[in-house]
Image 1 (cartoon, helix red, strand yellow):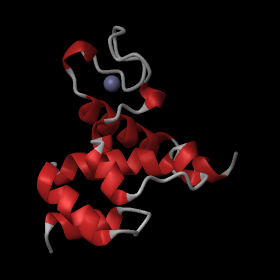
Image 2 (cartoon, rainbow, N blue to C red; image 1 turned 60 degrees about the vertical axis):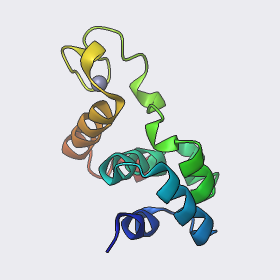
Image 3 (spheres, helix red, strand yellow; image 1 turned 180 degrees about the horizontal axis):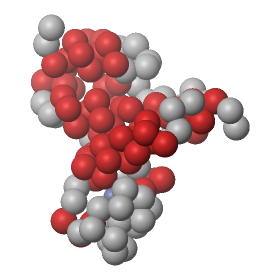
Length: 114
Ligand SMILES: [Zn+2]
């Protein structure tokens, strides 16, 4: 399975596959970064309401590089969200990964109980 196939499988809105493929080949993002971003983006209120960009748009706009708004200002010290002691030097991807790991550890089913 190619990286694009894995992206397509993970992406919640399957429209315009050939346009998405062309965008993927043009941007060739790191699959791991995209899958990490998709994990928190799918959990966001916007996406859960169905406001999910077309996959080609997502790739063209580089949306996998978006910063999780739940993380807040990553310049504060230490990182208010993931607890990293040197947030100035950690990437949004690293923060997202740490944040997701903490979510899974502390509240495995909390998302649906509110
Ligand atoms: Zn962080």
